[in-house]
Length: 248
Length: 248
DNA sequence: GGTCGGGTGACACTCAGTGCAGTCTGAGTG
DNA sequence: CACTCAGACTGCACTGAGTGTCACCCGACC
Image (cartoon, each protein chain N blue to C red):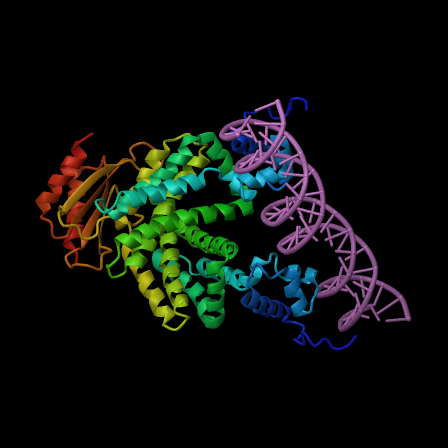
């Protein structure tokens, strides 16, 4: 056969070739107007091979999330108990931002695509959901034993993901021009302020902690949150309260 | 033609008939093992009619979410500015719980189904996402002008949805036996405490509330949560604490 | 040379979803 | 009563995603 002029790309990066072909067609015709046969033909492979590399047509739009998710779970599994949990999941979220920031132009193209194709938005949701579950599972482990451990874990994970996505999306909307890292740091800082240090696992009948209120607004907003079992003796409660108020 | 023995149901509730037929087959064969033709045949209608009532096979599993979403947006649009924003979205979330609580057995069946069918989980995510966007849009309007308005709106919306789903799922996991309303109230209370009142004008320096812990486990789990500004006088704190402990 | 195994392509198949054309029915009108 | 018009239903054909199967090719290894 004659040398195929369409796809003289090297053999190993056939996956990359498929991604490139797919995005070329998606950008010039639109996602729904492009069939898998079109992509495979442009990449110079058989239709069946496409599904060998990507389980579905949507997957070709998010080729690196699987690896990133694995990185995140590894990160959370590795750095065990010595870090503050909320801080830890915020750092994990920054990993995802790093993946986006690696290829700004690609990320922006993908963002525009997913924004206007409902099917891709739905797929992206399922991806984001897996990140959120990874964070929540980690936090559930760290919060085990606390009164509302799983609730707290789920809420914090959702808040972290929401803050991350808020910053990420505004960065993508600006065509990847600004400093994505700073935006995400700011957003995650907000979440850390809101949930930062919670109750300690000492399981004392009384616990009190000084926290800084989430409002960036006025000063003098420092509050003390005291959680006490109803059957705790009053003197014990006041004692705990005094130490919490006294310190700092 | 002879009287069709398969589906002597009345004409108007053909939608309900399709839902009933679908769930019957889903429960006895599984979701993926059931084709749309099967459902239509059992309901005694043509395959084409199924798609007149439901745009996709997944939609038959969530027949009432569209209405509930409309209710929620109407609720948020109606009750304008006079309520506290976070409180308002928590109330909106309770609307969704109400829909689930209307038909506990149906909700539990659907929960078990979506738990084990990835495609349905993905679809549910897109539904939940629309609720979350509705809440976030409302909050963005209410928080407009604040420094981090959209960030705050997105994070609070995500936290509310996560708390609601945490309580809802634990209720569904218990086969709809416990008090779903109380569980959701507790979970949303946690979010309201975390984000609830920012800079309120008439805020007392001390607040205390007796709550029932979410754990259905042991007795004696009642706790008192006390929130106090750091600069509040100690006697005032103890006074508030005594009244909270005293009642009940 | 023979053979074994992984990557590949071609074909056939199922099933979700859509467009179209024809049919039935029931309400309104002369 | 005959006519018609609108809306709901049906059947049919078609596209396209995703899967199973088998034959093939090619490099490695004996």
